[in-house]
Image 1: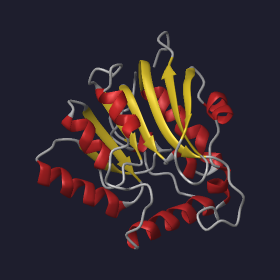
Image 2: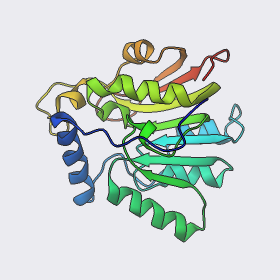
Image 3: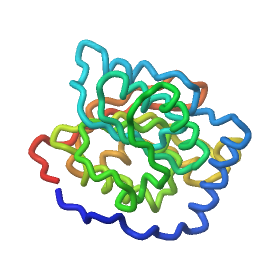
Image 4: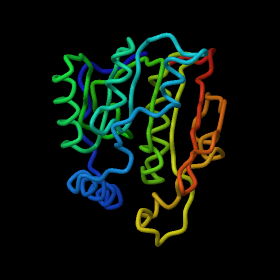
Length: 220
C-alpha cells in the first residue's frame, strides 16, 4: 500500500456535515452520548475472546468516543488506532489511556477523511459503534473507500448501526441519521467485501450488528 508521508490538507466540511458535528458535540457537552456507555459490547468481546476469536493484530476504531473499546482491544494485545470527530471525546480517551498506562494511537479527525490522518494501515480489524450510521449519506462512499484502502486481506469490519427511522423522532432530526444503515447499503458500498452476518440488536429501536470480511484475494 502506498501512502504519502505527509497527511493531506483538511477538506472543508459542508453544511450538512457541520450540522452533524454540532449535534455530536452537543451530546458530549451534555454528557449524554448514548453510544458511549463505558461498557464493551459482547459482540466485540466474542470477536476478541470467543471460540472463533481473531488473533491480535492491528485495529482501527471509527468513532471511538472516550476510548472504552479502543482500550479494551489494546488490553487484549491489539495494536490500536482510534479516531473520533469530537475533540473532547478524544481528549478524555487520551486521559483514560494515560491513567491505564496503555499505549495506543488516538486521533482527532473525520472517519470519512482518513487520508488526512496518520492511520495508513493495513488493519486486520475495523470496529464501528454507530459511527457510520451517523455519517451524511454523501460521505459514506468516502468512508467505505478509506477502510478498503487500509484493509489487510481477510480483514473484518464489525459495525453496529441504527436502522432507518421516520424523521421527527428526537434522535433522528438529521436526515442522514434517519436513513440509518441497512445490509443492502453496506453490500453496495463496500466493494470487495463479503457481508458475513447481520444480527438484530436488542435496543428499543431497530439496530443491527453487521460483520463484513475483506476478500482474501484483495490487494491494497
